[in-house]
Every structure is written in structure tokens, then in C-alpha cells.
Length: 433
Ligand code: URA
Image (cartoon, rainbow, N blue to C red; front, side, top):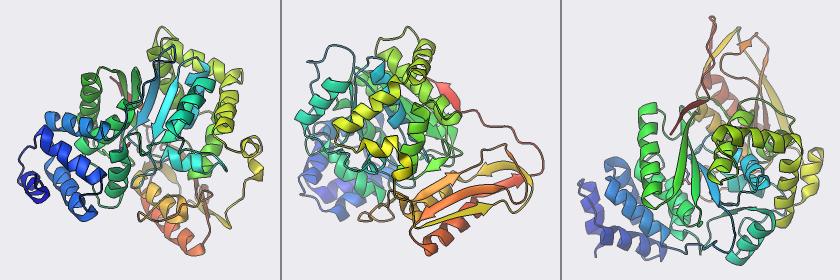
């Protein structure tokens, strides 16, 4: 097969066969197609899309680029959750220990930050010593010991996604339904899970901004998961403002720990409980999502969820001292607060810009080779619908350089709109499918 011919075919809006897709994925994974040609193929898919058959072929090719893990040695259901990505979206750090504390196995394979969104792996890397690149043997051993494990794709597990994900991140090819579907599903299907909870984000900080596109993505993800025989529950949730208040890798670990210790209420906790509730239901440890939510709350109240988190961190080599004593974690060189220029109700936030401001501060990558500053980020103090007086604190910015702070400041000021009239707060969970 000829790579250029296949790029042309997709460029000209033709469908690709299973063999053609398999050829492209396997050749790229084996380093036989250079980045510039594969980027061109990705852009053709981004612009012209793929039908549901091609999307399934792509998922299958990416899935079988590596091993499919067999977890049959564990008695009990294995359930995972995946989010399509957002700003301040740290629920994985909360729900993995909660569901594991309820007796559900959570074999989680996550990604790094993509575009303006954060990634679970980058957050875990902020915990000194935490290893996310476990071997398959270590992965199984941690999962068996404590019921949850949090790792990234390896050469063994969905290697095609590992490569394609970072290429998409820097070639403007992230926001594509077939590419997102195959990326998420190839990782998730490789885990050997029985059930999957999907958090499909919609709004200015999501890859799908319009609800119509989000529902198409939800449909594509659910159809693909089902075609591989998995039980799946999809939540369509709001991403028009940061989830929780903390954005940036260590800052998000810190906020997750607050929720796990029962010391933080609000949207982050609400969504985390709903997602873990659904995982516990799919895992057979509750008779409904509502029962699962109640159990999740109890596991936070009685300290077992927090204890489980410490266990995971310890088993994966992380230093639990910083989790127990977060005040010991190094602070950014510069911490600057910014204030509201006028009175008014917070009407809209351009959440994409908030994500980009966090990247600018050092919390993410602007190029493939950028190194993340785990301390950098934003504590965003407001929620849509809040009344702010002139001079009210909007956010606290953490970075290593004044120049980065200045750039982020401008983005944040430009991203918020105040209205003199009261504004209704947006609904967090828009739909459960
Ligand atoms: N999350 C993923 O794992 N892949 C995507 O493409 C987008 C979000």
C-alpha cells in the first residue's frame, strides 16, 4: 500500500478500508511513516471525518497496536471512567480511589494534557516519585493489591494512541469525533474492563463546544464501546467554566485530596460522586447510580476513599508526605492575585482561554517538547452566576516568570464577561445516556 495514495483518498473524502487503516496505523507505530505524512493524514481525517465503520476500524487498529490485558485472574468487575477532556477536570484522581474503596477494580489508563486541557498523567507526575510508566506485571500487581492503578499508555498498551495523541496535540487535529473516539476507546478497550463510564464534556473549555457536536461524540463513543461488548454509561457535562477551582498539576492534586477528605463541596465533588456512583453501579456494588452516589459519599465521610488514595500513591512509588502535608510542597516563585475591574454578575467565561492561560503559566505544553512546571497554574475563585464587586479577587496565578504571569493575566481578563443583571447558574450534568 502507498501512504500518499491513502492520504489523497481521505483528502478527497473517500472511505478507507479496514486493511488501509490498519496499514497506516501499524506503519506509523513502527516508525515507517514520518510525522509529516501522518500529520497530513490526521488533518485529512479532521477535515473530512470518518464514517462509523472507519471509526471502528481505526479503534481496532489502534487497540491491536499493542496488547489487550487479560484481567480474568481478578474476581469481580473491572470498570473505568474516561473524560473527553476539560479545564480543571481532575475527577479521575477522586473517583479511582472511591470506586476501589467500594470494591470495584479500576484499571485506569490515562493520557497527558492535550491542547488546552489537562491530563491525569501530568497531574500524577506532580506527586514526587509517582510512577505512571509501570510494566504490565507491576500494573497487575498494584491493581490486585489495592483495587486501582493509574498509568499511561506504554509500548505494550495502545502504543499507537501514545504516538498519535502527542502528534495531534501539536498539529491542530484534536477536536475530531473519529480521532477522539479511537483514541479513547483503544486505550479503554485494551484495559480488559467490563464497564466504562464516559464523561463527555460540552462548552467553551471542551473539545466539542456545541451541544449538538457533543451528542454526536457521545453517540460515537457509546456505539464503539458497545460494539466491543462493553457496558457503558455516558454523562454529558458542562465545561463552560473550570471544574472545581484549581487548574494546574499539583494544584489539582491538592484540590482532589480536599474532596477525598471531605473538605471541599461544589461542582467538582458533585460530578465526582455521580461518576463514581455510576462506576460502582456498573461494578455491581450498588443497585443504581443513586445508591452508588450514596456509597461514594459514605466512603468519603468514613475516610476510606482518602486512605485508598494514599495506598495507590504509595504502591506506585509516590511520596505520601506531600499528600498528607501539602504545605511542604514547593511553591511557585511568583504568585499574583488579580481583581475584578467592575461590578456585575459573572455571565460567561471563555474556558478555552482559561486553559490556555494555565498552559502559558507553565502547567501544560505549548510544543511537543515543553517541560511542565508542576507548581504552575491558576486558582480561579469565581463561578458563573456569582456577583462580583469591583476589586473582588478573580484568580491567583502561579508561575516561575513575570512574563508568563502577564500573558496569562491578559487572557483571563479577556475571557470573563460581567453582566449587571442576575445570571442563572449552568446545569452541571446535562444528560445521562
Ligand atoms: N482524551 C483522549 O484520550 N483522547 C482524545 O483524543 C481526547 C481526549
